[in-house]
Image 1 (cartoon, rainbow, N blue to C red):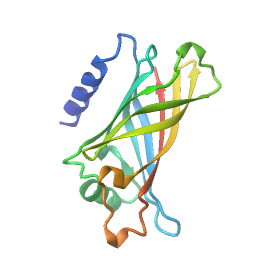
Image 2 (image 1 turned 135 degrees about the vertical axis):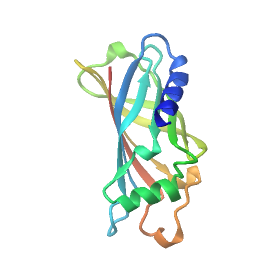
Image 3 (image 1 turned 30 degrees about the vertical axis):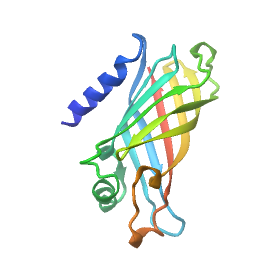
Image 4 (image 1 turned 180 degrees about the vertical axis):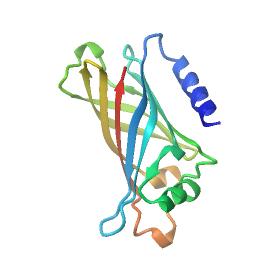
Length: 179
């Protein structure tokens, strides 16, 4: 079922792109919502799909929520059942555009680009702006971004019993090599 959803969303989002697109099916998203002096709240998803149209700078990404792995299995279970409700909201989708993007101007030295778009998570869509470092390598285009979102912006509530142990501010890192 996951594969069908992934293929369907990927196909729909890719249809808007021109023939020549760059794809990464193993982009990595790591998020952290840790609070000092408490157990680390951190997870990684190594199977994120990212698509870039190098002619227009349009970019789209899809992450399955059940793909996030925690060090502690109980945290992963609570994340999927109580926070992001993965059965009801199985994916996070980002669609946006890299501002002033010109693939011809990329070099091996990373350059900063602003990416503006919409992040859909937990049934809510929020506009976000992300600063990304993008470079051209022999093996493709490397993209790295660090940004933050608030769980409350996506109606993800943190129960009172753990409110002081889990941050509302979620720090996110994204890394991809597009080919």
